[in-house]
Image (cartoon, rainbow, N blue to C red; front, side, top):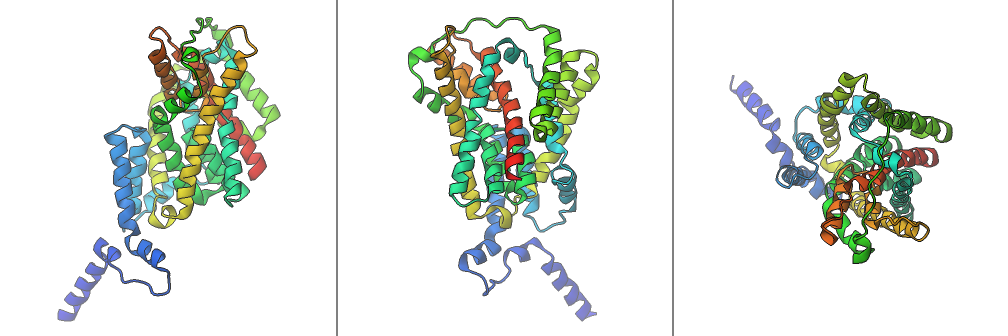
Length: 388
């Protein structure tokens, strides 16, 4: 009886989380590897708590940062992870991977393409912002990443979390934890990262430029627009059709006016449910052995470079367009060419108001902002075609 009790207590002790943190060192691995083996989980728990703090206290992309960080906590606890593994398999695994597509459908249902339709030339600003993606891709290749890995890293420059997850799961799934955290972190830091770049590349006189009111866009135009975009995508770049297709379907449901219940579900219940599962699934990959690597530091650095290049390229493109146009564009709206909707447009409006209290740029900035959403999806198709 005594032996059974001792055996049971030993088994119970060996099953506790404490034992996982104080396991003896492995003499066959390096000191760094041994440190990460012993203390990596504790370090990742601290990192996940920090991400939770950013989401809750600082409200940096809380809708995704909170579930990602919480999922990361669970992933680093010595417990059964089968639920998260199942969510990941269904939602992100390249064999299925439906979560990013469903989120794009919800984004389409929430997005008004009217400002882009009213001023089509602002699409050039959204296109220019994609320079950050391909600039970071070239830098990643110079640092020794493979073509597939470089393509996955470059997409961070689009400032589009779902697109980053979609591409990374297909090109370099092992980099998903670092790329997902980088993409959503930099999206959240748009109000911090973009203004210094915008001010550096523009004069006060340029920031004070007031733009004329946009024309009213008809319902017929708004219905036709997603159909035209999808058809052009299918003809020119079929690899981008999954993302563009869901985006345009969601937008068509919003604009046609006959499926309001479907549109409302996409904008609210459906996208909220998928956001919860997406965050937990991404968090499941934030285990110490996958995240605490030198590659992660390189990816975080390349991500900030990509995002900065995208912002700068949009501003510079607006300045170039002003050299050939009678109707001047405020270069600040070029920074909204990244895909962070509508945060980037709000930042452009805020910086414009600082230079001129009568300068309301929000609706003008929404043109390149929604063009950036389409642009990042198209860039994703290009990367799939080039790097897969």
